[in-house]
Amino acid sequence: MAQEIERKFLVVGEYKHLAHTCNYMVQGYIASGRRTVRVRISNERCWLTIKGPSKDGGLSRFEWEKEISSAEARELLQLAEGPIIEKHRYLVEHDGHTFEVDEFAGENLGLTIAEIELSRADEEFSKPEWLGREVTGEKRFYNSHLRDYPYTAWSDKDKE
Image (cartoon, rainbow, N blue to C red; front, side, top):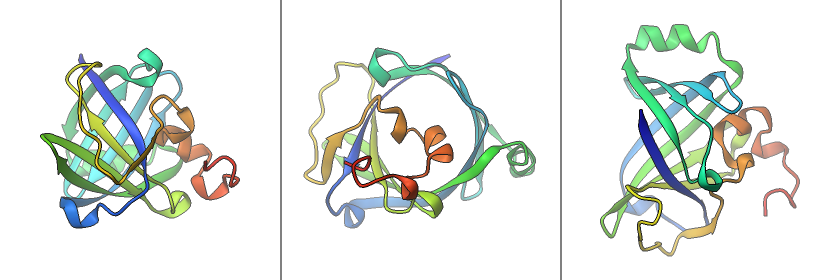
C-alpha cells in the first residue's frame, strides 16, 4: 500500500492564472469513517480509492487506488452515501511542487482548499502568497466530512 503524505491549506488569493490544468470532478463515498472508500470521476478517467485512518495529526495515511472504467464508476456511484462532492481541481506548479487547488461547487460552494503531496513528512516547500491558514488534520475540511456537513451550512465562526 502507498503512503499518502499531504498538507492542506485554505486559499486566500488568486491562483487560477497560474494553473496549467483544470478538471471537473465528482466523487461519492461508499463508506466513510476511520477508513474511506471513494469513487471519483474526473473528465473521462475514474478511480476507486480506499484510504486508511489518518496518522501524524492528519499528515499521512495509507492509500490504495485503482483506475476503473466509466461504467464501473457510474455503477458504484449509485452506492454512494449522502450527496456527491463536486469541485474543479486546478493544478498549480510552484517551486518544484504541484499544488492541487480544489474549488468546491454545489453544497460546498465558497470553499477552496489547496493540497500538496510530499515524499516525506518533513519535506520542505515554499508557500505561494495565495495560501492561507494550514488545515491539515482538521476533519471538517475532509471531503468525506463535507458530504455530511456542507460548507454552505457552516456558521461564520466555523469558516474561520
